[in-house]
Length: 302
Image (cartoon, helix red, strand yellow):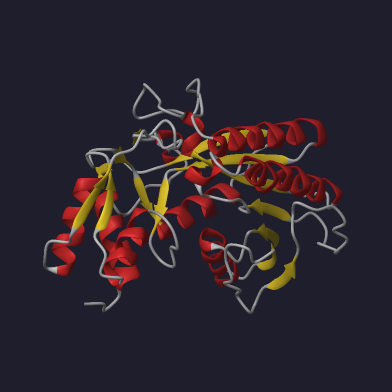
């Protein structure tokens, strides 16, 4: 089977390309290398900026598209709105056009838990009346509507995947990476607010298992799935995991912030019962995912 993975040189995309190739699939990666540079040499790589028109490469017949290309910086989306719109909406529309022209078998869209905003129902199910609080979340919601439109009007089987926080492996952003980088630079780790904000985390291999199940699913039309863990964890608890891993108390500094102004959810916990009915279950809890991720990022650092 042939796959087209946009953003395939990025964090999640690189892991997914590896998984697909290991299972014997043919993979074409489309990426502009703006936020990632990982290239599996067994894939076909096309450097292209999805914000632009003019893509004319042959992608084969009836490929499955997995659209991961985006700018994942939620806080920056509140400042650089137009750039995020282009990377998160324009790029999605252009990719859908590519899929339509290639008569795609399936279109998988990487959405986000940010579409839910500060949900009052936790764990949050897929049918929750979401109200995004960041431009990133809003643009992901627009992307979902575009995917649903193309599925309905052009007969493309499609699915939107709302990810919780993904961590582990070659992660280059999120709280684990930021804390580890601050420690390596001998700087206090910066904690926003009281550190009691709480979110769910999924280890990268668990995410790959979930995506594998969904792209192999026999279905028609359009659907949406949460991919999240069975629990959640506070920033203070994350610091406790770091303390146990390094065998000491990391220095910390507190940054007072208004979470609403930077578009960050104070709490995030997804109801993943829908995908569990298809046979998926995370192997690692949020705490275990964080611990493994610190191991991946810190390695043998002391």
